[in-house]
Image 1 (cartoon, helix red, strand yellow):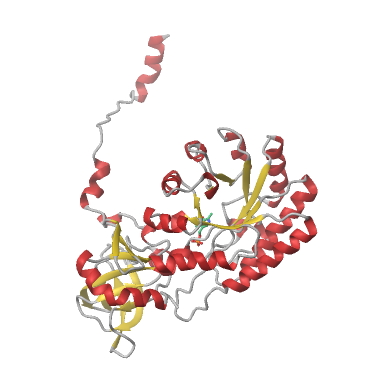
Image 2 (cartoon, protein in one colour; image 1 turned 90 degrees about the vertical axis):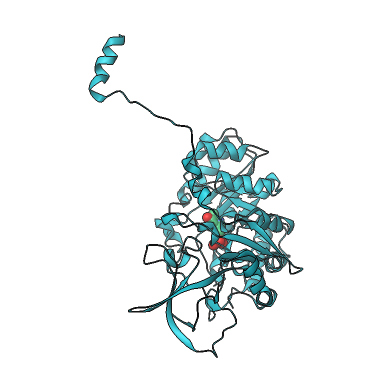
Length: 433
Ligand SMILES: *Cc1c(COP(=O)(O)O)cnc(C)c1O
């Protein structure tokens, strides 16, 4: 089910008061749900020697949420300078931060190495020579190309910009070894939002095959394998959920078998984002207009600047009307924001209970890749974020954007530049010689 029953029972009785106090639109996250999911995930892998989840910060980059996740014993996966700062501010130790960047700049490498560093996961061999200094531990991102298929959501690995090829694996690890690096990990990510756990089991199988090759060919014993993120959630009420237990049991067995054959067991890392926070967030918005033309439109006070997934991927988000059910009169509508783009729709030709202006609309599963993907096109501002605590109290954990924020980048020191007109360049050069 999208949005757990527990979250519903915690939120819905309080929702009118919360909406009245804070005003809509807002994303609200469920502390109990996020912690429960972290606990379940860690528990599922309890028979693996050393399992660690590195939460993908890009899914929900809010310091209050990151603190919760850190308290649960998870680390963080970052890929930009601000994400590194967020992870460090949450109190994460350097071994709790993975830096999985791509097309990486030197400035990013500098920050990755600052403040005690982090675990570097390199996207390409060329980055090895650009490191400010050689770390003890390095990991490479593997892209299997046509040796494996990704799922339909992430596309074919051979078309993906990420990672190094199978042929480059040996070259990369040999070069790192020769450069004096002594500790190694291996990373991959070839699926996204996948609820069939067999894909994850196959991913681990692929990583262990390479671990075996590196051990027998180069004598490198990988300290960890990182299976990436991509665990799926049921966005649609009919979707089956990921079978976490079967996935974890199969992977645990793979690791134990590997250990028996090879005499060592790499630690298992996961960098899930969506699975941890996705179902524990909703976007609450109010009906502000109804319009009847060729279609019936329900206009709400949020736009795609608050949640881009439906417009960007045609993604389904389940939508409910507060205090109305299937037993109420239904209508088929497009639920729209105010952007001057016709894809600014949270739902297209969706059957929902008939609404009136003032009704609260709850858009499910916005806890990951929701607020974080927001933007300012068309002068649309991002909404606030709230946290529902275990005791039923609510905290504002990010204020809504204001027009002043929108204008903030227009306040700067004047910088007028007068390039020498092209015609004069040769003359000027002659003058000075
Ligand atoms: C986006 C991303 C993740 C998280 O993906 P989810 O679908 O949220 O699990 C993990 N690792 C990397 C490298 C990513 O880019």
